[in-house]
Length: 469
Ligand SMILES: Nc1nc2c(ncn2[C@@H]2O[C@H](COP(=O)(O)OP(=O)(O)O)[C@@H](O)[C@H]2O)c(=O)[nH]1
Ligand SMILES: [Mg+2]
Image (cartoon, rainbow, N blue to C red):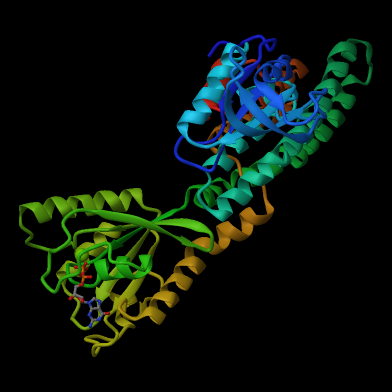
């Protein structure tokens, strides 16, 4: 998308298309009010509408005066608006007919159809939000869980922006100290001494003021990903141990076929539920066993693929049957994946002592014994999953800033440049070289806020938006 001059007025339907009680059309730009006035007839006196107040009336076809829809309209004068431009929002009836007609009238009255994300892009270009806040808008629209929303809200408030601005401040100061040294170094007799002292101070202020806090933000990326995007568990185990029963139990409905005959589940079945406000995806797989038929063995391959994709495995063992070589195959397939072991079918007599699990299969956390057919046990299972896999991400992300993938990459590059700057400072290198590395780090941090004029980056981010946002 080319950068349009911000002199035109854009319009779009801001709500999803479909049958609905209400729908919203939004206009933004210097002509927003004028455009709207051409197609709106106020129910009261037709005076200059007050800003940030709802007005009742009708959208009319200007040529014929025909009433198109009964609406509430809100005019918001710049700069206290989403885009910092004049904005008009028209609350029409929902449904494609009304919305499309009103939109068409707005276009004939002089507005241009907005491109995806263009309202938010204007908010960014007009300096109301930085790029990390624009990304938070997408995240808010997309968030499917309460926890993901909380995380997005923190970015929307500009918490990351404030942190990054603080780091930029430290780096800016470091560079201006270096500049002074570069400019005057030839005049100073005690140059070497001064330089050593300055380098020491700079090293300390960069490490404590930037490198360490950046590293701490980076360390939360993985946890943030879980809170944002959710967690994927894969149910694994031999055939007939109760994997499909566990899936149905966790979801609270019959999603997979449960059968007494082994080898029933041949595909990977997936579905999700909310656990502590986080979206949890569960994959149910074909059981892993020694001599499967052809279809089933493709299923087993898929099981192994799902293991790679998942964040953690839930390994079900039928506690009423003795452990055998097939259990060993499952153990090997799980490898290093974080894993919770369940000794299922606790309603039946146990075939082996639970303590033998860590001896036979070293490196696993203690198993829990339960029956996936028992609702109370399912609650225990959920509590255990939450404790093992969500407790840390949730408590850390509740109070901290968590970067997204793009921000993480910028932070990593900034850290790499600061690492080089640190080495140069320690080896008393030329000020210019150090300043160059610090500048690289500054550029990366500025990219997080969108201060670099990288159009491709802006296009990539704003193209993820829907129309009307
Ligand atoms: N007694 C008992 N039977 C169970 C339990 N969980 C599953 N089953 C039974 O074990 C058989 C296989 O279950 P299924 O969920 O299809 O296992 P999968 O092959 O691992 O998916 C079915 O007959 C289930 O009813 C349990 O906790 N106790
Ligand atoms: Mg099954």
